[in-house]
Length: 85
Image: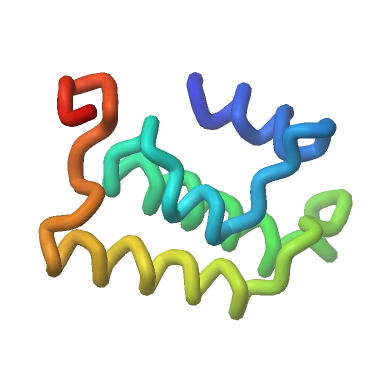
């Protein structure tokens, strides 16, 4: 799954923070929300299930709000792969 690959890269030298995910041009809004929600679930349940995620849930919430605001304003709903470059 593409999220697994991106998640692996988040720990590497190409570290993406939640706001960079929210503004990433290669993901649709649905993809961004799915990834951010997965990241938030890991951040809130990290103590019980494994290593701590480097981001606070509040930071992830701000990125989710930014994606939703963009959808309401019809900004960033398509990826660049659909030909909107």
